[in-house]
Image (cartoon, rainbow, N blue to C red; front, side, top):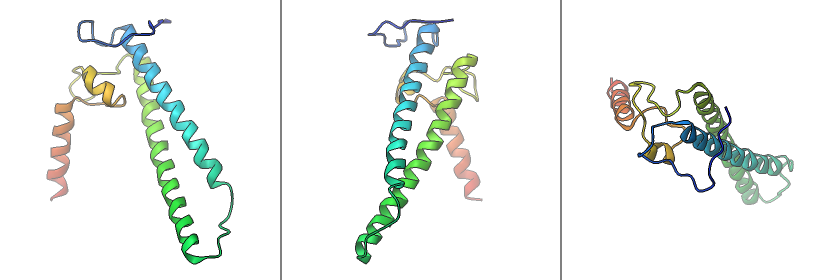
Length: 138
């Protein structure tokens, strides 16, 4: 089913949660975010593949090494994020997007606007983090 979003559309609490317009809005938001991450990743790939380290000065070399390590870490973070975006897009397709994995309750528009890959409501997330802290201290 194709849904056309009005250009100025913003999800609101006055409409049914995750109606086709909202689902399409978040689908487009996720796709745009994913495209930006891939574009940035292409940029870091290009600069990483510019080859070996030619700096003879030890300080310059260390600086290049540090930059490279940072780029690799950033790429790794982007890759994980893209994977979470892909999972969110699958939830949009499957109709479970926007609902808490734990409680089945709506996650809420404000949270999804801020974190479109959220899988839990704030309450469930906080419970989850408290449990993790408790078990980490064992």
